[in-house]
Image 1 (cartoon, rainbow, N blue to C red):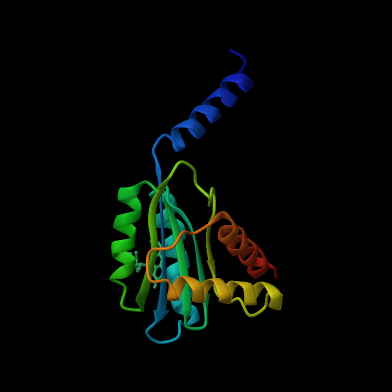
Image 2: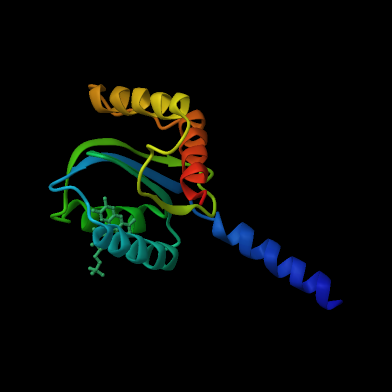
Length: 163
Ligand SMILES: Cc1cc2nc3c(=O)[nH]c(=O)nc-3n(C[C@H](O)[C@H](O)[C@H](O)COP(=O)(O)O)c2cc1C
């Protein structure tokens, strides 16, 4: 078989294999015990980027002043084990488990990012974000993290990544 075709088939098989298990999506809100320093951010970022990709977990972490939001997706056991570690981290206190649900697809395919601040993004986007954050925080039951939420989080991540 032509090398290009067998390469493409291998890639396709890898993609199929990747989603061969149901995706577990977990989101939580937390607040820092004391404001994160650059060293905290560097530590969390480097650990997350390495450990999450090793576990095939994708996710987004947004930190804005005392409001932290993280979404994690992957195999259920991997996400739960990671969450147990994060929950035990003395640098923050979890204030709300937003959801822990199974889905057929990842919403955060290939995403693995830490957003350190949202103050430098357009005000209408940060207002929308703060509104969603307070709805999730005040919900009396588990909430759904919707595609619209995820799209907004991605936009925030992209703005935050701008130089
Ligand atoms: C808000 C917050 C989010 C974090 N997110 C992750 C994460 O996504 N992945 C990760 O490996 N560690 C994350 N950490 C760090 C873990 O809590 C913990 O420090 C790390 O997993 C310890 O790894 P070690 O036991 O290998 O030293 C996070 C910490 C905080 C405070």
